Image (tube, rainbow, N blue to C red; front, side):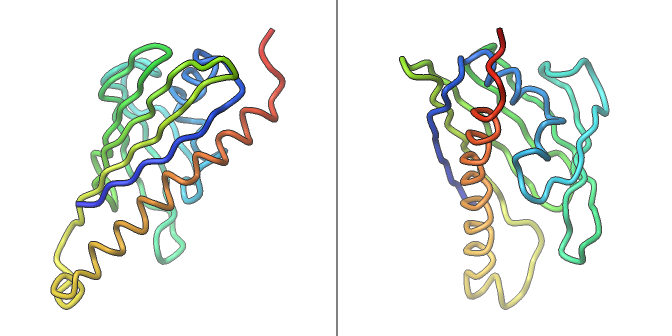
Length: 154
């Protein structure tokens, strides 16, 4: 199992950040490798809602990966799991209010899937997955840039 987390302070109020993160269709605007997202099932942004992400595959083709919201606490927390696709991931966004904005922590956990023979024996598969989740959570810096460049809601 691989785990990584990263946090940033965003100069926006917690509800603005929460609502932006809750709308999974915003993911392609700040996450590399996610080409598009559409609502697949359920009311947008609630527990149980499923989104279909199209993610970049190794061959350059887009691969579907379904993402389900498993927890949504307004202004505080969004948890999700990837239920289909090339990677088994669970994670969440955890928000806390500070005087200068909102601190956002992005935590992600991944289980390597399949058997890759010599990669498994050498522990390379786990290292590859660990590198991948570290890279994914580091993209939170891009979320900060995107949100801080947008005009604040009046």
